[in-house]
Length: 470
Image (cartoon, rainbow, N blue to C red; front, side, top):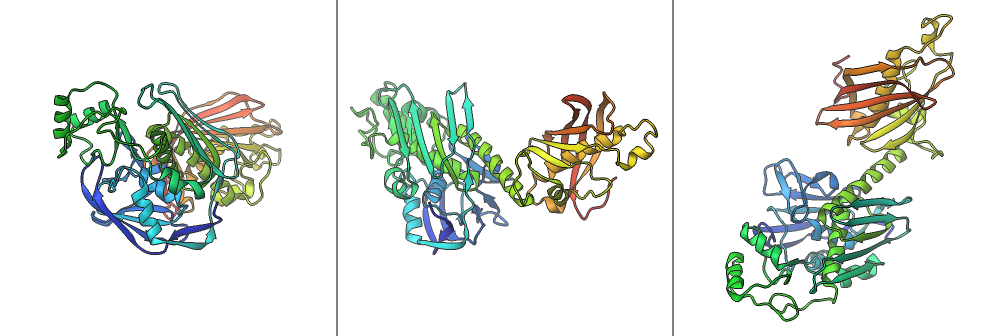
């Protein structure tokens, strides 16, 4: 696998109609600087909005993977992204003047050819690999989908599908060397679907850009010639449709014996590009689809963001520690004597954080609360929980250094046991609800595994230069 980041050498364009929307557009690949990432730019819209190719911006997975910001969307990005990742490109501007990339022949090969034509440039910055160092599992019981990522100093994907259809059967495939196998063995694999799916989509006026040149249609039920002719009209095809003896419409021949499962791997490669970083892992998938792929990508992306966060603030990796007090002071604005978190021992990005506060007799507040019988004020226990919540919230933002968390309300506060010198407070803050500028957090404090305090907080996220508030 490559060590340095890569972009393309020159501009390259492709034009055509989208598979699902049937709209015409031109898509142009352009070089991008180091650490730019992959971004789609809707040049046909006012302001040319940019949509980063990450799982954070996925808005639909019903018929392919759609990303968007506000009203700006790009449909069916998975084949384009598969081409980009398959060619190990890190930084790329993808300008598009319509809703959906040209479908081409239903594979990733048309995009691969354009990117190869553009050539590559090695950049000076190293690739920001996400190294999977622990098993990550996704399971969907209802749809019998399982995806697992295992530690490996390489990138491999193995996919198995079983649709219980005689024409398709049970198929599996694996890609073990991205650089050697992708272009020849997987990029040419075309979209496939069942005849019943085509009928349902055609009846809804969908797959407006679909035809038998950009998809392999598997016959999964009997349909007479009259029905086939009616389907041809709905799809706007000039030629008639027939059922082939090989189980595919129009006797379509496959490019590979197991082309359908190879295309599933291609889709997964494109969807996992939305992690936002190249990964080193062994990925095993049974019966994957876009919805499952994206859920898995989101899970891996959270791991990536968390590792990136720890690397940013924690200079030296310490066993059992996420952030020490030096790192905490880079995140929070609080200082002595009001910094009430000593360390962070666990962090689930955008979900939950666990911190520790060692309570000693040297705390200033014990001088007056209470002489002869020191007890930590309940309001300071709440403040310690809130500071943990601030660490969780600020680190879920793109630019935490420019923001502050102001707590607005405290609800259902309960104090169950006094906290005294010598106790070690274990503080938990869990994200309950997150909106654009307001969030809800559930906080708990424990001593020796016993709950000593709990409360619910509502906080506002404001710009750091905004000093209004409490």
